[in-house]
Amino acid sequence: MEYILQRKGSCCSLVTLLNALRYWGKDTPSPTDSDPTEWESLVDLAGCRHGSAIMVDRLAAHLGIERHPLRDVKEVCASVPAELTVWNPEEVGSAMHSVLVIGGVWPRLKMVNYHWRKGPVVETVEPMLPDDGNPNRQAWALYSMDDGRVTCKVCGGRYKLKKNGLPRGHAGPDGSYCRSPR
Image (tube, rainbow, N blue to C red; front, side, top):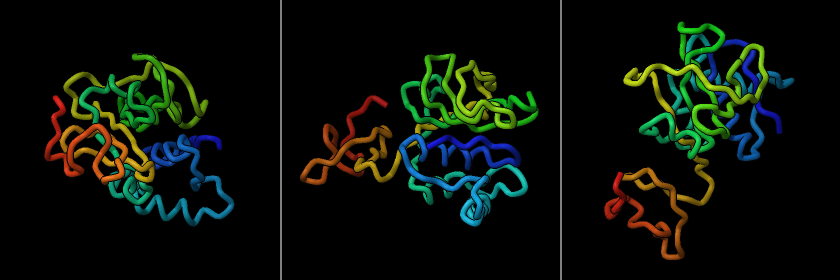
C-alpha cells in the first residue's frame, strides 16, 4: 500500500496517523478516494477542516493508535514509526508540520509527507526543526493498539502479555511496580 501525500489543507496530523496505519499494512481512507465520505468524517473528527488539527489525541484513539511523547526528538529513529513536528518546508518559519518518521540515522531521517505539496512521498533529509527549548519541538512514538501489547503508565514501555495477564518482563499492568529508570 502506498503512503498518502498531502496535497492541500492543514490536516498533516491526520495524514501522519493514517500513514502510520499504512506502515503497519492497514488499509486507510485517502483524500483521493472516489467516495471521500470516510476521509471527510476523519477531517471533522481531527478538527482540521479550517486550520491545524486540534483533536489529534481523539483522532489517534479513534484510529487505534497510541501516541507517547518522546523526551528528545533524537529518539525518533529508535521509535519508528514516530510522529515528528518540523518547520513546514513549504512555508519556512511560518507554520509547523507533522511528518511520519519511518527510519534513518539522526539527523538524516526517512520521512513520509515532508515536502507535502510537491513530494516525493518518502524522502531522506535533515528536517528543519524548532530550536532546543521551543515548545513546538516535539515527537511521539506511535503504537498500534491491536498489537497485543500493553503500555506501562510509568515508563511508557510496550510489553506483550504473559498467560497470567501480566506484561512479559515487566510488573503489573497498571505500572505500579515498574522499576524502570525513566
